[in-house]
Image (cartoon, rainbow, N blue to C red; front, side, top):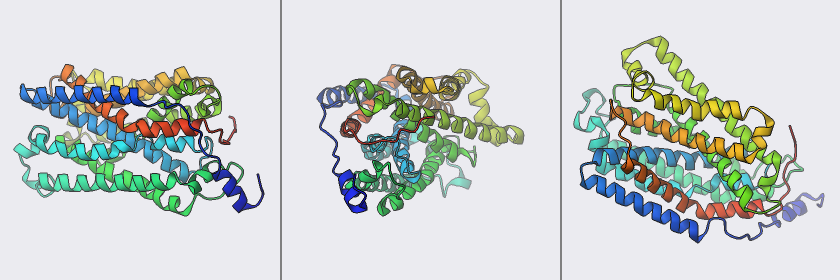
Length: 406
């Protein structure tokens, strides 16, 4: 490669991703579309046959989970720029951005909550005068809708710049320490800050307000920390699946790259447990009834206690113990299994955060909730098809990547 910086930049930018057979094409779209139809039918039938409360609970849980995965993965791409990560060329960036179309899907689905507001938010039918200025329907949907719209717009502005030639050339320039392009250095921190602010707001309005007398100043950090980890875990799962589908010599066959994905799943699982314990210990030693009831109901009372334990096992204990060694981080089957179980655990965690506030003594999970979840999964997969094909192209392009080994 030429030593002239401008010439070297042009040479790097000229390394274009090669066309590959679609890994997320018509078949995936048909299956995802069928899942959407099944979920929509189940939702409508529940509304018409006395299961409206259960249907709206499932709707809210899945909206929070899949929005968190999509936004968390996008923020991971921004974080890679902020930390000047070049260990995988442009592929990790494309992988982080692959789920972004669901941000607009989730934005519109959020306003669907308006039609189930009286079944979701207890303060709608039983207003709290002291909190009426904040907990009222017009203001909640206005502020959360604006927040989700702003962060979605900022995310797509970031993606547009990230997919440009300048940013891509920077990601594969493993032989220099130049800063990312200026526009990236502006948009990446903006997306990260908006993520913290908007998802803290979402956690207060769509989770904490379901138990409107409960309060926790750390809850926003805990909520968006879980969303970030779910995004990283989804990226690791996709990486392990694509490794076997893209043929020989794709980026995901590089053990060092898989090791890096494993390290992120491991590290931010520890960060999640740190946030959970930091919140729990303060509530425990404060021993104030206005704070403790939320935790006691979920951790110490049946039938919710086993689900809370399951979340702890799936999100922290399994990743922490299984991914402790270098070998397991590099083993696709192990990393993929841990990641899949982690995503199930994070879905359960969102379920445990939401539903006990509305159903104290029973777990209202059945076929209806399962099918609604399938519908949301279908919408998520359908929206991810173009992004996953971009990942496949980047992973098989032969871009230079870092090869440092630990």
